[in-house]
Image 1 (cartoon, rainbow, N blue to C red):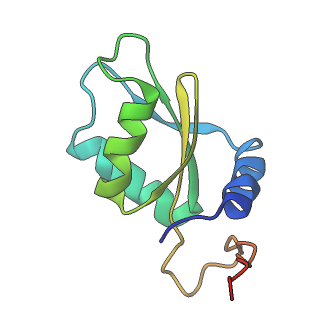
Image 2: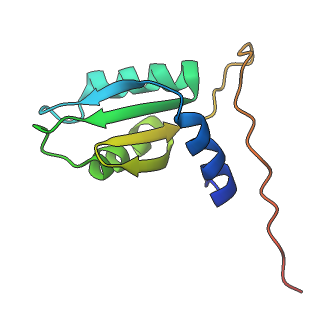
Length: 108
């Protein structure tokens, strides 16, 4: 699943109002952090993370390492914060994020 620029912009706007719930510390990305990220993505679809100053990773490195482990997409990285998105697979979830349609122009 590759996000278009319009979808990415929509998710960036939604991410402005959410709190940081994932914190990458000096231990880096371990099994507990991946499990926490998976649980949060399943419940919320869009999560914001932060990399502490004492971490050996940058925010971009952390986001790009965490995305394949959680089957999510990196939406944005700014400073020490990053945003990840993965659509929920639960059918009973009421407030799913509906992405805008990607209407690409096709050449003739």
